[in-house]
Image 1 (cartoon, rainbow, N blue to C red):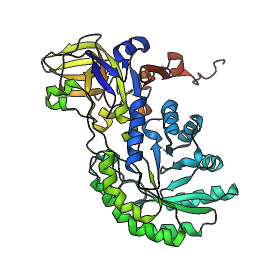
Image 2 (image 1 turned 45 degrees about the horizontal axis):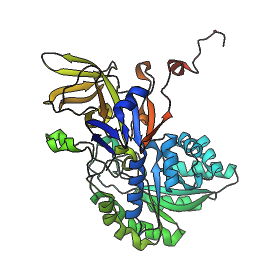
Image 3 (image 1 turned 90 degrees about the horizontal axis):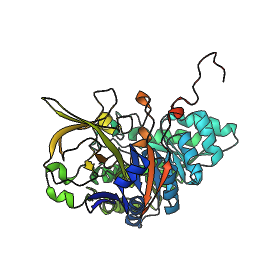
Image 4 (image 1 turned 60 degrees about the vertical axis):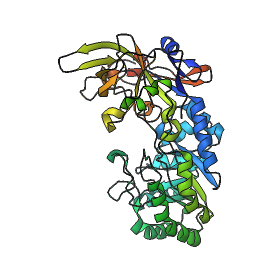
Length: 432
């Protein structure tokens, strides 16, 4: 669920009028609901209560310091994939000892920084990485905690770009080779075998694939527990959220509220996996990202022009693919909501941005209430893989980020200035 709804015809984030907010901070603007993030964490935490568990938020989904600090206060650990994300967690007050470090291309510098910070565990993706971590740890006089990411070859039935658990994906080692890889890791003198990790993909909307992956790996986990004394099993993240609303299929009841139940609830997820995992007697790690923050964020934008051709109506807004790339990259769906509720008959249109690319669109051939110049809209469910994937393409400054909490709001990242765009650049031979 989330906390964006109409009040007296105006879209609010919790108790904050988003039309007024947009007038004060400008657009494009990302707005996050603190209450939604807290509720999502607490609901998942409660559903997993039968297990000895830790929820490690996947920082790649939303790395704003305010979001990380909020989750830290809720008790979350963190799943990181770069040295930069580790720095962000530390800057937000997070404990490296509650961080897992994933990713297929860790550099020596990143491994060194993580070891010196005292991270909980590296999630290792290859034998070559085991050798490198062992080498770096040895040079520091340390032993590095590791878990091998094991690929269970489970089809999560998600978009090909966010599928990670099949044998043709670049992540992890195959289940058929896991015993051999762990045996090699046990021989390396500067490693400590701490656990086993898996992750089958993102935006998964049914519990079955999670249960299938866990069940396939249980015999291996039991063997590693008995042979090497591993202490945890991480089953990764991937719980999906609802992006499309009932309005997309023409249901007028949608206008009464923009709150939608997820297709897979935390309770559904727990019911499928807790019975499989509980008998292990190990700590269970979970690494959700999108579930925590996806529906907790919206991207506000202002209509610049309405362009009508014999073939189409194009509504041009001031947000672009550089601000939110999911529709262009993944064909991702985001509901488009006017900040002022409209009873007018919907119009079929494309909502597009100003970037000089044909792929710069948010909707195509979708029925949306008619929009005019200076109207404002919200691109819903933009809290995950939104700002974190933003760029300066077309030399466009990145948006402002705002956190709302009840009736209060605060800018948690300033909008980039034009000076920020060229900061650090130099013309050869020019003084300064």
